[in-house]
Image 1 (spheres, one colour):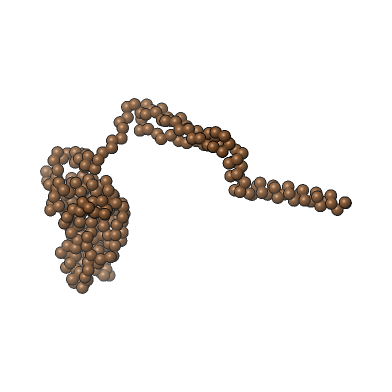
Image 2 (cartoon, rainbow, N blue to C red):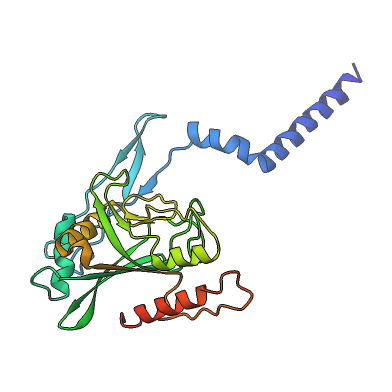
Length: 279
C-alpha cells in the first residue's frame, strides 16, 4: 500500500508534464480542433470596391458569423456605387481597334502596316503612316514564348525567326483562334541556309491568338481579333513584319568573330536600319 501512493503521485506528475509540453509545443495539432469546435470567429471579408472616386464613402467591413456551432454564414454587404464616376466600358475587339485608330487621329483605315516583333521584350508593336510620319497605334504583349534569342535555322528548333518578312495569308479557322502567316523563310534565310548546307528550314510561322507557341507569336484571342480585322482592311500585301531579337533602337548587340554564323552581323545590321525610323 505504501508503494502505491508514490507511484500514483509520480503518474500524476508525468501526466501534468506531458500535458504542459503538449500545450506549449503541440499547438499545430490541437489548435485547429479547438478553433473549429470551441471558438467562434469573426472573419473580415472585404467588399469589392467601386471605381475610385473622392465622393464615394469607404466600404464598411463585412463579417462572417456563426449560425449554430458548425454552420458559418457569410453576410456580404454591397458597397455603394459611385454616383459620378464613369462605368467601365465593355468594348468588342472591333470597337477597341476603332478606339486605337481614333486616338491616332485616323478617320479611315490606314493603307499600310508595320509589325515589329521584339523577342527579348516580348512585345508586338503595330505602326502605320500618316502624312509621311510613322504613327504607333498599339503594342500587344506576347502571351507565350519559345526558343531563345537568335535566328531560326531549322524546323523543330522552336525559334521565332529574325528578319524582314511579310504576311502570306490570313487563317480564320486556326486552332489558335485566328492566325496570320509570316513569310518565313525569306530569300535571305534560304541563301544563308544554302551556304551552310542546311535544309528543312521549317515554316508556318504565325502571329496568332491563344497563349501557346512553338516558334510563333501568340498575342491572345482578343488582341488577334483586333489585328486580324485591321489586316483585312489594310490588305496583307501592304503589311511589313520586322522580327528582331532585341529592340535595336535601345540596345546594341556585338557579333564576334567566334560566332558560328558570321552572316548574323549583316542580318542584325539590316534589321537595325529597318527599325530606325520607327521611334
